[in-house]
Image 1 (spheres, helix red, strand yellow):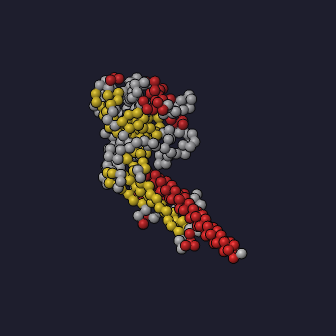
Image 2 (tube, one colour):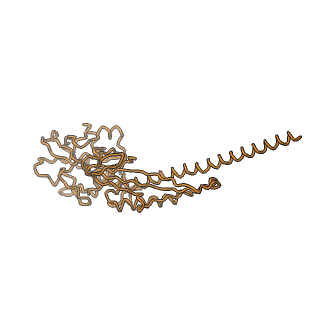
Image 3 (cartoon, one colour):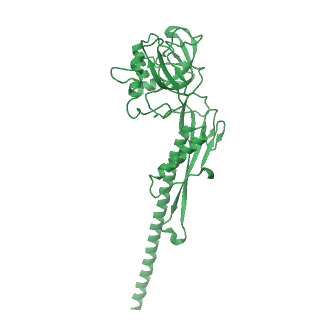
Length: 343
């Protein structure tokens, strides 16, 4: 009988130890799981804040304000795992032009970087029994705002010597006035880079252009393009001002979600936004005239006068971050920028 009691006692001890081990493993799993979730929340917060701050570079103050606002806004949506981000503790770091970002490289004259670090504290639930109160998950994200060297265009042009005077009105219609000195004729329009003249109106209107057409008419800095003469007023009016189908740029700009957009505050794909090459006249006449692309101008289309004399297409330079575009941190200013996550 004594042997059986000892055996039962041994089983009880082993069972108790096993139960404690299982509880410990469960506790470890719960607390480690919370740390993993916190790490993902911290990374999401850092990513959102850095990507939001990037377009505001090189304005450090505005970029920092946007980053902190995004962290605060996201905290309202993430129950149980609030994040912190303190500029005073070095959680927001900036790199200016011609500086080097560690593990990335040198920035050129027109590239800037920002890194945002978010911290998410986690209070342990079960590990407290062994004296561990909690831990903090910290994650960072670094983005660079850099020039874009190419993209699809509206088939019109502006002289490359025109300064980027953001907010100053420009007349984009070089075919009707004003004319540039030493540039003969009335070259107001570029031929579609693909050579397909039938795509001229589609590119100018910029509405539901097939991906293959966009790819075929992609141009880059240092490309040489030719002109298209004989463009009738009705062609560009229907693309930009009014059209029987209601799909001209200024008509679509009245649609939601763009109806309330302004020059100062606009959504990325507003129909008013036009990407126009800034070019140098190389020579030639008629359809053989050639222009060299030096840069690009992103314009906010203000108005179109297709009846007056001279006729006009009025726009203003904007600072435009091109969605999904590739960039080069060492290239010259092109008038277009992209914001890329680099670390």
